[in-house]
Length: 160
Image 1 (tube, one colour):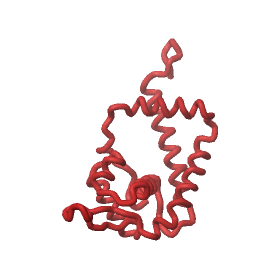
Image 2 (spheres, helix red, strand yellow):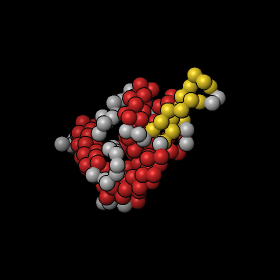
Image 3 (cartoon, one colour):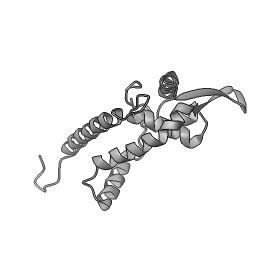
Image 4 (cartoon, helix red, strand yellow):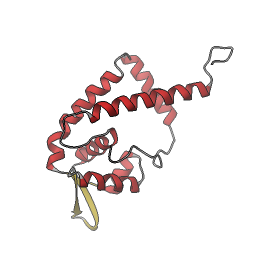
């Protein structure tokens, strides 16, 4: 549907954005979960692991801020990833009340491979967009997210 000026109605844009997002998430999840790794991966798990890898060691509250999610969600993720032997909690030498998170050797050994495969999957999912279209899409999505607080959003199931 569109109005007489051939400008899509806001609700039509929202519907197509939601449909596109669900389709991309489904395809990404299917492909990332089919990787031959000794542990389960999902987009959110990979994002958390790569953020921890970038930092080396990080406090959970700092991780929550970097990921834009609630501290409780980080705790749930860390619990699940620790259970899968991918993250470990260690005492913070600077503050004995605090705990740091770091990758285990298992995660370190396989993370680069997973990130490389993630990049290939992402490229396949947006292969039909040229570089200018990618820049424009990025700018538009960032504009839609500007000044929004997504820390309360639910992100994917921890075990998937």
